[in-house]
Image (tube, rainbow, N blue to C red; front, top):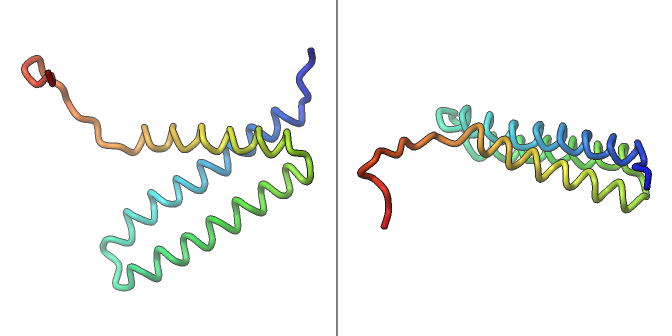
Amino acid sequence: MTLDPRLLVSLLVGVVLGAVFFGGLWWTVQRAVSARWVALWFFASLLLRTVIVLGGFYLACSDDWQRWLAALLGFVVARLVITRLTSPQAEITEGDHAS
């Protein structure tokens, strides 16, 4: 069984697009909390991130459902990585274990 290189490319495109989408969301939240027009920041960011991601998916995957699936898998992987990297780390001490 051989792996189609286009699937690997679609997976990597999904990872990059996921990093752009969720990294952009994190950046927007950091900037918007001190902005004058918070709703405008969030709406413009959502619109821009969505256009970039959908356009990237369309260009990378065209009409092949397997490539779409690989790109979506990469997108989800990027979400997990970005969520892990941007979440505050809670320190667990010896006495803080939940029962």
